[in-house]
Image (cartoon, rainbow, N blue to C red; front, side):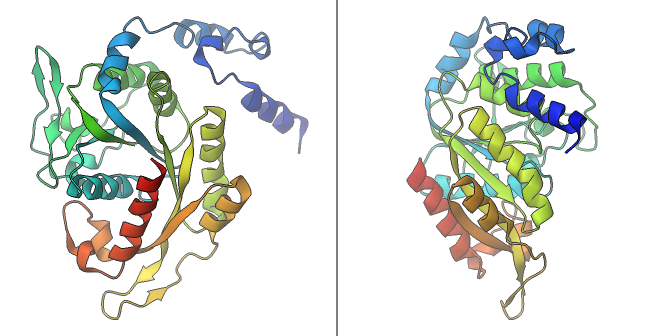
Length: 305
């Protein structure tokens, strides 16, 4: 490892997890980003009490995370929300993927507007399980409109999505996140700090290359004191629509590798299936061979809440 790589790793590891220490901790004194952190990260939110009141009415807050894109976070978030709602729970789904929202399509609320009342935003209600849903995709005039925003504007929007939304009393709020460990993740963790998230579900695909990226997400959770409920290995083989035989497509076993390395549960492995690709908008997966695996994964998540 080069000296530059070692220096960068030291900075990443020592960067304070508590935003109140951002720009103030000893490690920050020689950092070129000190002033930016002081101006943005160390100020207490003057309306945190309002946020706490909103979130205090929600029993469980579950984050769906992955350092890598395209591994099925949104699909898993929808499956989890739908199955909890089917059991009679009051469920909400918050999509904080500001630049690539897909939840409105998956939950069939693309044409539902988000209403602004004197008490706050009224989230759309999905016809696929009566799930309260809020996504930036529901706030855009067109689904093809690009969101080209820097960090502070993303932070402000996510803050509004929590503070100004009439979630009401919920049993579970599922939070679908974008890939990485950046602004959106830091913002949601900071807003949830007082009421504490119940934990995070981390997704990976089978390749070892994916494991290297997803491992950073697990370390992020550890650093931010977010319990990791478990790991799901998605796209673990391909389930033939004709004979239901599962064939290996991406070798590697990343899920088991990560679970062993970080001593967290492996919640299950889910193969690729045409029905799962349209989870939410289609119920075809419920009659498929993968239905049992999906229900087993959700049951394990429920046990840990």
